[in-house]
Amino acid sequence: MWWGEREGREAPPATQNFIIPKKEIHTVPDMGKWKRSQAYADYIGFILTLNEGVKGKKLTFEYKVSEAIEKLVALLNTLDRWIDETPPVDQPSRFGNKAYRTWYAKLDEEAENLVATVVPTHLAAAVPEVAVYLKESVGNSTRIDYGTGHEAAFAAFLCCLCKIGVLRVDDQIAIVFKVFNRYLEVMRKLQKTYRMEPAGSQGVWGLDDFQFLPFIWGSSQLIDHPYLEPRHFVDEKAVNENHKDYMFLECILFITEMKTGPFAEHSNQLWNISAVPSWSKVNQGLIRMYKAECLEKFPVIQHFKFGSLLPIHPVTSG
Image (cartoon, rainbow, N blue to C red; front, side):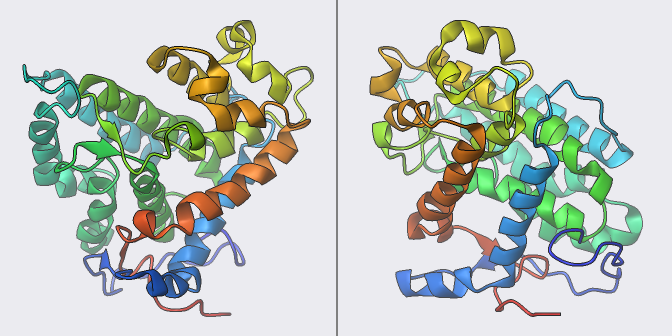
């Protein structure tokens, strides 16, 4: 693991006892256990390390693309292809198209095989544990909804791949720009194709119906930008000219495609953020908001699963 401790530590041995992750946060008082856990420390450390890594860099920046990164992109391309092969069905309800369940069943069945394409054979024992996070990262097949808890499961999936040494310290820019960005494209396609409901949406008072992390990492990309300021992201021209370089603006573009009416009305929180003077202040504020609105909210965290890679036991120092 290459964050929160000295670098160069060996990946866990193949003899580690991997386990199928399960839910551990069953009641509101259990939230204390989560906040003290090794899983929480490792998860937030991972998010913040990537936040630092992409600071001031465009999506079009030249970065190293390892074989593991290429394989992860290929895995996401497969999920994308399955959407094309599973068109929405005719149904009376506008939202939550039931074809999503057919698409999800395919992932459920194939997840371990997909993960096995990314993980080298000497780490094959880790596949069932890591695959759980992939299955949790694409929405809920009963409710046909998607939210920040599913997004967190994808970040946890990537975090686990780092912990077993599949992804390394020099992959960090590619993890955000290539893998996470491709994941976002596939999630947007799922949300659009199957008209997925937002999970636990706070409506107009939430940051966004579906995502949170691209706003954090996307605001970090814009820190110290020579001319783009937070006030510019509500300007259509600035968004259209720069969205291919910046994740934050790509998110804004998607919102404006999906929603009608004045921006200040459908996305009030973001409208307020556009008044913050600097991107570094926006970035710090979003990290605080992510902890408070996502990571410290029982309705989100009750679904999080813990195993040997993201354990529920309290942080061990050393």
